[in-house]
Length: 163
Ligand SMILES: [Zn+2]
Image (tube, rainbow, N blue to C red; front, side, top):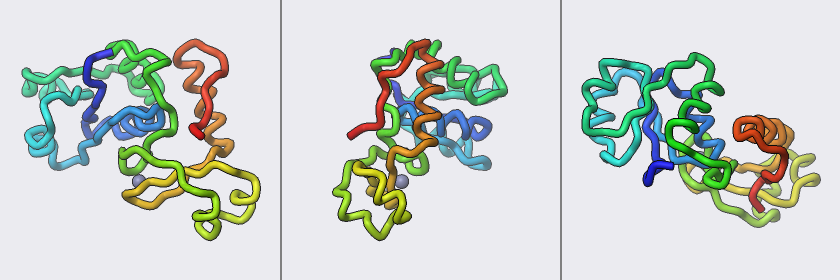
């Protein structure tokens, strides 16, 4: 893996950025319309993920992964390959998908009225984003994502929701 596995995705790669966040990677995303400014404001250590040859040319001093695939899951494979990310490097579901910040475990009692009743009754571990307040728990969508992550790294099982 690169010494710094922090990423900056161009506006065409929003879904890829989301997938990197699901893996627990720090992935910022440039909203369309402000590309040059976002690049200028971004710390140089962040690896640029782009589909644009113009942007790739312009950012000579930055480490770049040029993305070729159209499908987000294939794009994710390209990043894993190029950045030499291994299974042990990823911390699935440790980051807010919306805000890109780390989430932290919160007491079950504190989310009683913030999640649906059936969720509160069936789950014991909850995490919260301190920026947007979103509550996370291990639901079936997470089981499906874990299967996809396992498939990406060619392994079976072993990944669990934190906590
Ligand atoms: Zn958040």
